[in-house]
Amino acid sequence: MNKKSDNFQFSILFLNNGLENNDEENFFSQTFGGRMAFNLTGNFGLEGLAYLQTGKLGSGRDLNAWYTMLTAWFKPAGNVRMEAGLEILSGTPQREGSAGKSKSFTPLYGTNHKFNGHMDYFYVGNHINNVGLIDFFSTIDFSKNRFSAGLMPHLFFSQAGLINPDDTDKDMPRFLGLELDIYAGYRLNEFSLLRFGYSKMFASESMEVLKGGSRREPNNWTWAMLVIRPVFFKATN
Image (cartoon, rainbow, N blue to C red):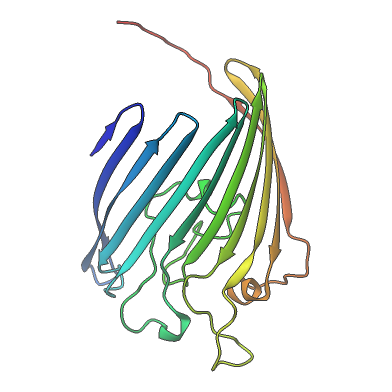
């Protein structure tokens, strides 16, 4: 259910998600919460989201997880938009293993590539029973005529504890790394657009423990794409 106006948006969601295991047993989890967004002055706005997950995973394990995000945006000039925010997805401490309840929030059926950086380190693929994520992010967007560009840095932390493999009585620092995303676009005409981007991850030792690989190796990628959105049919009342 949602409600929209020029200066306010509000929505609530309830999802009952059923999974069948190998023994043909059905287990159901529930995701519920909402979103609110305010356009306060035309040049400044706030957005907040909060969701809970309960029920059972497909394995039959109890689920008790949560998610929240808060962002603020500002337009200091007509061609510039700035945004800063914090996103938190709850996780399960590694010391708890698979015993007890899972505290790891799962963004079911989400467009996960849209969030948590363009390098897709998190929540693209299997992320059941993970240590969660804290993402401090900001964005600077610029657009003029047919050209647009932007910069989005992310500071990543684990939400739950990560065991130190060299001393299992201790936890690793929760800081995972810094990611920088740079992107640009040029509109060729009213139905086509060229887009380019470059991303680089500066991973910490904790990220290496969590994801594997070597943090000392270069980790970056660049991309280019052509977007075509033709209008084949248009009708008016």
